[in-house]
Length: 238
Image 1: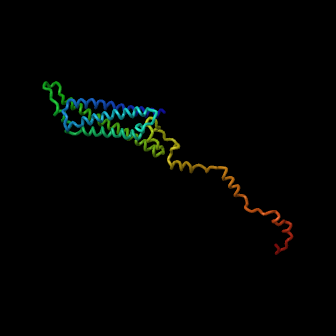
Image 2: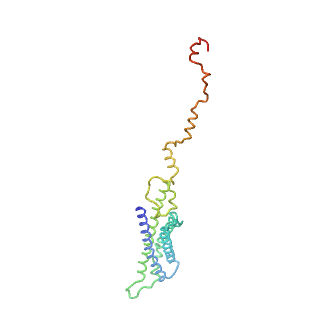
Image 3: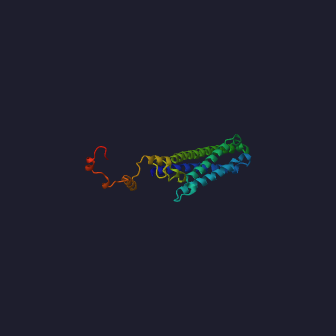
């Protein structure tokens, strides 16, 4: 129970950190959308906004449904691997998208410098642009590392015979329990356990053995020669 609670806390903390960075990225991208002139070089802005909104929706749904009593399909481990992995690759794509040299010059080209020299908006936007790029890679690393760790644990339990791991919820499954395999064990382990046990003893084989041990033909006492008659026989007589 304590281990499951630790796994749940780790999962919630990771999702909360990703959502916090997503909120920062979302605010910065909305600010870019209001200041930068839309062009083919600013297509990363709507893409980043879409990724941020999807992250909020998916992670919030996974957190809420994982606490429900009913085992919804979207809250199962296989669905969580799919959706979180998709978010990780989308954040990685956003990080690569904002790493091109052309995009780094958008703020300078699309903003006017301050004539007084007290504040240069291009420098401020460039700094915010770098924050978006860094947080995009951070989110991608966290989400993909979580998916990789969860996938390794699922494969390990699947090979041990616990195939219900794919349809379980992450907070409810005993991830760090590797004891004896229960009724859902694999055929190999079940066969090994069966061969180590002695054969079952039932009453029916005893009766069959007792019946088979009886002689099929028993001669009557009148048909058997007496010992006294055998002693009177001469040699050559039978």
